Image (tube, rainbow, N blue to C red):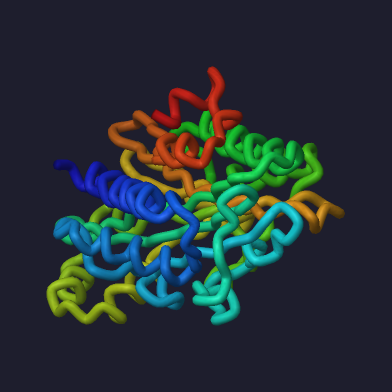
Length: 296
C-alpha cells in the first residue's frame, strides 16, 4: 500500500469505528454520554493494529473528542478550540436520539508511514430546516473548494477562496489555533506527505515516545491560511476543514466536517468517509448529484 493510501485507510478506520459504536448504542433508551461514546469509539479503534493506540492531536486525551448538542442548545458543539478542558467529553451530557447534534473527531496515525488520517463530522438527528441547510451548504463549500484546486495553487489562495464563499453565504470561520501565526485557518498539510520523514524524524518514531511523536506531527504542519504561500505539489495531501457558523445566528451550530485532499502524481482525490454515517443519522438531504461521488 502506498503511503498516502495508508493515510486514507486510517481515516476510514476512524469513520467506520464511529459508525460501529453508534450502531451499538443508538438502539434502546439507555443514556449515551459524550465520554461513554468516546471511550467505546477509542476501544474499537484500538483493535486495529495498523494505527497507533492514541491519536496525535492531544490534548484532548487520546487525540479525540465527542460533543453533544440539540436544536435549541447547540452551544456545546460551538467550540473554537477543542484543546481546552471545557471542550472535552463529559459524563453528564447525554445524546438526544431524536433531536441531537454530534460533533466527533479522532486523529489516528498509521504505524507504517507515520501519516495521519484525521476524521471529524457533525451529525444531526433533528428536523430543523435551517440546520439541514447549514450542514448541506458546508459540505457543498468543501466540494466547491476542492473542484477549484490544481497543482500550483497557493494555500493562501485556497484560504482566500474559502473566505469569499463564506462571506457570500453570511458565514464565518470559527476555528482558532494557538499554533497558527494567522490565528485561524481552514486546514493544514498532512506532515511528510510530500517528501517523507527525515532520518532524524524517523528516529523519533523509532524511539516510540508518543508525546515526542505527537509534537513532531503537530509542528510539521503548514496551516492553510492567508499567510501561507506554499504551493500544492503533484504528490502531497492536505485537509480542508473550515468550521463555519452563520453571522448573527448563535442558535445554529458550528459545522465540523474534516475533508482531506490527496494528490498522487498530479491527480487529486477528495476523501470524506461521511456517507455511511450520514445514512445512519437519517441525513438523506446531504446526498445529491454534486455530493454523492464524494460520499460513497
